[in-house]
Length: 180
Image (cartoon, rainbow, N blue to C red; front, side):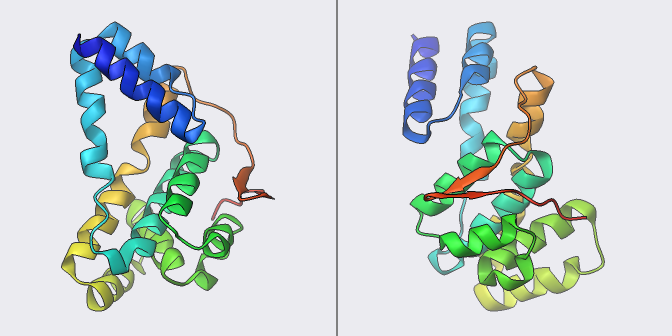
């Protein structure tokens, strides 16, 4: 019964976001216990903090996910951000390599990239987020920065990783540029 519910949830998710959930089905078919644990990851990754910091969270999720994958997982994060009314232009700027010009989305994106690489500007980005949006926003951005890589790495580990692809934002195709 639990297995059927987990698979039904994965199928609804696949339909909602036009996303390949074959790896989720593989996990559930192999181990119901593993499928249950997988189903709880969104409790962590989708903690978005205060509404006024939504764009920072979305940018951090995008920056972290892009660091781990430049294909379907990035497209999923983009679709979820657009669904949350994050401005498409700011998302595109991050994907095109101009996070500095992407406002609060870029702030979150740069924060995630700095947290992952432990760069010298991390302290300043952390302070900016906390001063402007509060400690809860910083927690949400940190959750996003650490969790965006989970699914790409999990998919690759299971043999379900996909090659890089362009990302669609509304009717525009964006060729993703990785930060160096």
